[in-house]
Amino acid sequence: MYEGSMPMPPTPPAEPSSTPPAPPVPLAALLDRPDLGLRLLAGPEDVPLHWVHTSEMADPYPYLLGGELLMTAGVQLTDPAHYVERVVEAGAAALAFGVTPVYDTVPRELVAACERHGLPLVEVPPRTPFTAVARALWRLMAEARLHELRRVTEAQQSLAAAAARPAPVPAVLGALASRLGGRAVLFGADGTESAAAGREVPAEAARALRDLAGVLGPRPGGPASASGDGGGLRLAAYALGGGEGLTLGVATERRGPGDHTIAGVAVVLLSLLTAPHRGADVTVRDGALVRLLLGAPPAEVADALGPGPWTVVHARGGDGTPFAAASLAAALGTPLVAADVATGATPATATAGPGAGATPATTPTGPGAGATPATTPAGSGPGPDTPGAVHPGTVRLLLPSSAPVTAQQGWTLGASAPVAASELAAGDAQAARALRRAEASRAALVRHRANGFASLVDRDEAAAYARDVLAPLTEPLVETLRAWLSLHGSWDRTAMATGLHRNTVRQRIARCAALLYRDLDDPDVRMELWFALHSAPNAGQRG
Image (cartoon, rainbow, N blue to C red; front, side, top):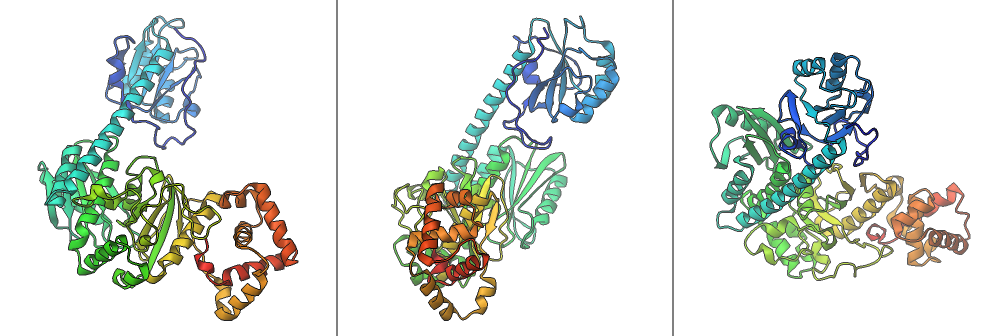
């Protein structure tokens, strides 16, 4: 039965605590396969299996990630008790032992050691090769992943439909409780229960859920979510956007794959649905957004959006699901998000109420977004050299400057400096430029940097000096020079940031040096040009 080295699906290079690429599969699912003929000799059968690994090392500890089904024929098994102890220390989920050709039966000492440590031990019959067990496990994982995606998609559709009902908040809570098989509660800032749906939970679990929601609170920079256990139930709490301290609490008997994503969609919807009831200023802001969508110039409605300041965030990445942008908005605590059609993500505000389905995926939903026509076809916008260009696949978000902007797993973010409502176009350009710098430097988050010492110079004098210095250069040359200087003269990173070929970057920089009659290798010259670029008129609105 033992076949030596066997072809296995590649294991992702990750730490033991990293998230597996697919939902885990219970050991019982493998035991139920009659074609494998597996038999449980010790331990529980409900342990989750994250992956599978075969090893004939005397001590497999250094080669295990944790959570795997370890398969062996016992080629170097000399001390079963010590072997099991090391396997348990490594965090393996279960041990599969193949009989023949080394052992005719599973050693009794191995069975006893597994029973002492509570490690599941499975006997693999001679007719079943290890590759068959591995293939069966990966197929079960693929089926589980597909089931999870279908479940999350169906839940999103159900939550969106609930948000369009006459009483949307109770409807969303009811849909969430039904999908997760538990109870969903909306807590106010003072910890009182504002609304709830789903089956009743024990008093101990209700108190624990309220306490967990209190951990989040409205304070800036606080955690966006928390989880725990209480009253025999699995508990989770999520802070709603808006900074008013509203919190969603969920209590379920178990926590399944995809539950966090489903709850994230509910958080975005509830943030939008509760916003109009938290103050007249929010209602005025929503009216301003409607005027922007109907074609009003941003400057005309800037005062209605509030004095600000605001932070504009550009993001690219995500997991490719239709609700990636909504999940990002929930993590950053804002309902104001516009997702490019190329992301495949639906803006969070597109499902906020009745008739939301008529909102195109490219409809801008945040202040200042009205400057971009909602009917612009994807891919037909400005190129990478155009100032203020928004690249396909970019998600744009608007946050109060008091809200913290933190790095998010799977996303690359660029954040503007705080800007007033009347200066959102400049903030949008700052965020776009910060995002390109983040991608070029492979950083998760890059913030727009203030002028520093340049702010000590008279603005008009600096602008006049910049016009004189940069006069020989065309706009494409200016933008290429700006990117090249910001990336410390790196040809490859400048090419990545501008979307140009590496040779084109070299040619443009050489052309700049010739037109300016300057040695661009001189640090003083670079400093002077960088000051001029930042002092030039409309420099803050260049992409």
